[in-house]
Image (cartoon, rainbow, N blue to C red):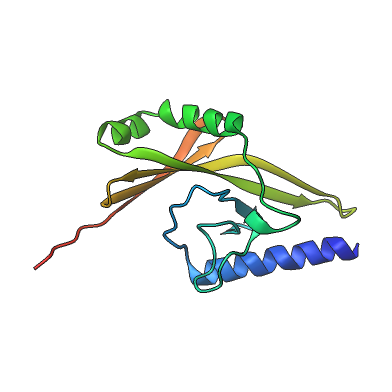
Length: 155
């Protein structure tokens, strides 16, 4: 019981801190795990609070979470079958990372189950664009694409 309360306190703290501080622009390919807890994203490299160093689930509970190549390949295949993602790839975007979103469920008896049913595929185009593709792994489809572009005018 005490360990369940401790886990929930840690997860809540991570989610609130990350939500309050926003997302960082990290593009590392280390085990970037995102946690879906109570509707907030948090945890893992790339979603760490600014100025706090490496914190979050990517380095909690005894070490990093390893994402299998099979999971990554499955997510990438689903993304590549989407026509909008195909357009982005044809436009010069490259897939740079796959980050699973781990949903944690606490049952009435305190049992905690975790499952990665959704993932974010990160695409980059040079230094001018980035796209975040949300993939529903269970349904085998892309559910959202967020494009970020940057224009620099030097004078």
